[in-house]
Amino acid sequence: MQIDEFKSKVLSLQQDGVEFISLQGAYEHIKHDFVRTKKYAVLAFDDGYASLKEVLPWLDEQKLPCTLFINGKYLDGKSYRKNPKECYLTIDDLDTLYRLYPLITIASHGWDHTDATQMPLDEFKQNIVQNFESLKTYPRHIPFHAYTWGRHTSDTDAYLLSKKIIPVYIDGMKNYNDAKVIHRELL
Image 1: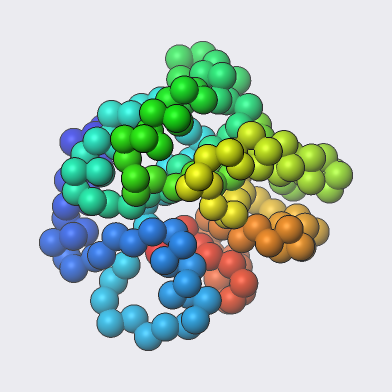
Image 2: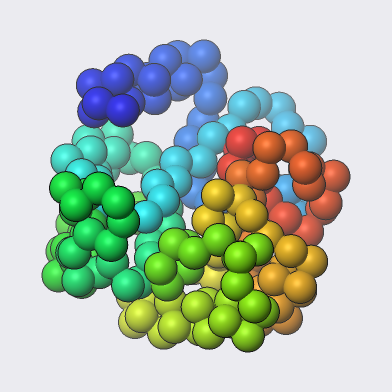
């Protein structure tokens, strides 16, 4: 999506009475089963694309919190996926973003954007540990993990919850009745 289109959508939602809140705020609301008196939304960006540097100043100007779901492997800025033109934030970029934009939080999207259902559980565990190790030095790192493509198993969920990591899904309406999870579409 182009930045102007993104800005337009955000402003349109605000005009419709939607309040943008942090991911942690949304989780607290859901955890405590609050009665909604207005509409809320959370801004979250997966993968850590370098193009985020173009929109973050505007989000900061608007005082809009956001969460970056980062793949730690990509923090070297290289492209590891099919499109060699994809650029990712680097470790230096994250350090700069932290200094400039206080409403940003960092969360996990796995070490290397691998589908949790396509790897043995031990490999998934290592993927999570490695990613959290790469991100834990950031003061606003939060214990949330957005599954790649929303794909998960009961074992991956159990592992995250055992580590006090909150799973975040985008899952095509499969798990909306589970009170333990937070769903990107519903925020």
